[in-house]
Image (cartoon, rainbow, N blue to C red; front, side, top):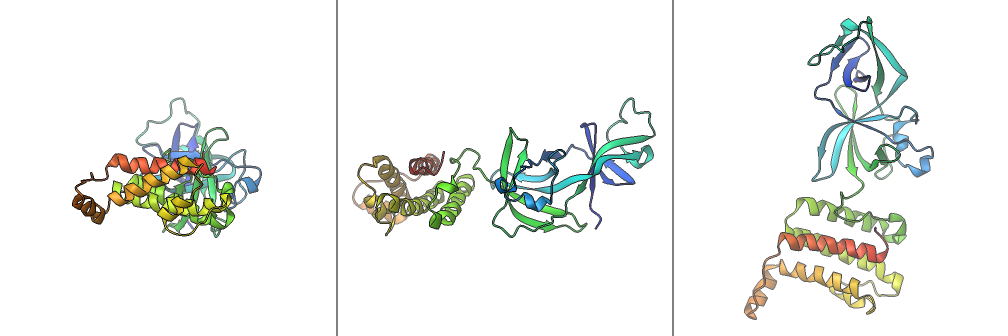
Length: 297
């Protein structure tokens, strides 16, 4: 396998190539450190990086990022041997940069990283990787691994948070038998909020409201059977906020249907179309429900 080696000069420039030829990378690539937890149990997914060294953690090189889908694609690099390597000056192409001032030595000494060939393809569901450092980091699920023509491995990551659209989902607090269904529905709402028009956003939120109410009602002795309207009736009367939020989502869903608009027109009561603000409201109400259930913050 060929693969590319990364070399970092004094934390100022990034080069790529091999042990006998390096070219400056311009513009500077986006490189993030991988947060390496000493306890693998606390960081599921780190096993894909082999046995990373916390002193010189792996790097993630971003090739593309789509904020709409929250998808990030790129490659991982791990420290090469003792990290520091030397290249003769004639082996290093600085263009479009000028040669580093004051560099009179016959060699460049740089921090060297080799491309990562994963030791374990993630068979587990969406392993988790943290990028940044111990105090400031973001969480990403590994959702795809692709082998490139030159032997390097391209990773597809999806953000584990919703960029502020929804509260963080506490999967440990979910009913175990409904955990996967709620998690998948949560992802659909987060994706819809970024990509869809207001009517389909409301539709996705209504379906997720039904899923969450059906999962929550047994915890308070309610009946989890039926469509959203039936589930709303089963909500205890003292949980006014939950009942009202679900009712609003249900009503917004009906407003988006042509049959409902025609029925209301026949009754002499025109209803307005579902607006962008209504779509945003339905997403906010989903966040409210999750916090009321104790499943989000």
